[in-house]
Length: 201
Image 1 (cartoon, one colour):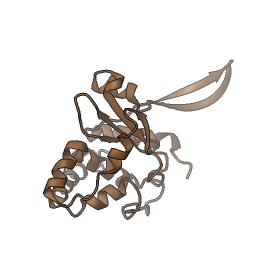
Image 2: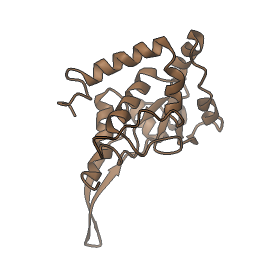
Image 3: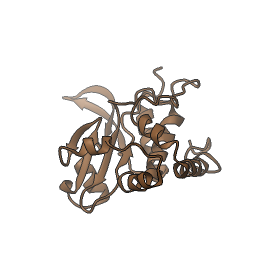
Image 4: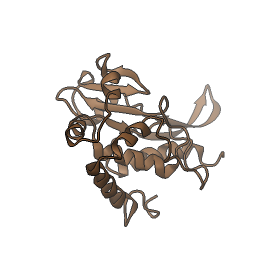
């Protein structure tokens, strides 16, 4: 589907911001090289440590950044610690998780990708997480490379428990506190004038 290819990724990020989250910005430009027109290009902010410092304050070294399990900034074991978030049914484990993951923003991120039917999102592609190291903060997921979204009305990506971040959602879905939090974010974003309501979209 070649319709609106350049608009989709920008829409994903703009909608994540409309949901109250952090996301890079896009800018469409006409590109000329030595006077020769090359067409319209989509320039996008990369969510790295410089991006985090610019948008969240502090210095680049204050942040951890993981992209598709690759540590882009921070200690070498950052991805391993992030991967260890599991076994989350007990209240004690869930409480521990809430100190490591911004759960409301994670729900928003999942809802956004579900809504858009993101076909290019999974264990090893197209996700970033950022967190502040000093002072310590929770990980936040950021929309990234969302070109394969809203392609067909029939797209349904909800049932992918074998992939990340679906695997984390699968671990969380048995927790009653998470279930209530998920329902509240659906109410906030999908109903009324929410960011995922038909009017807003």
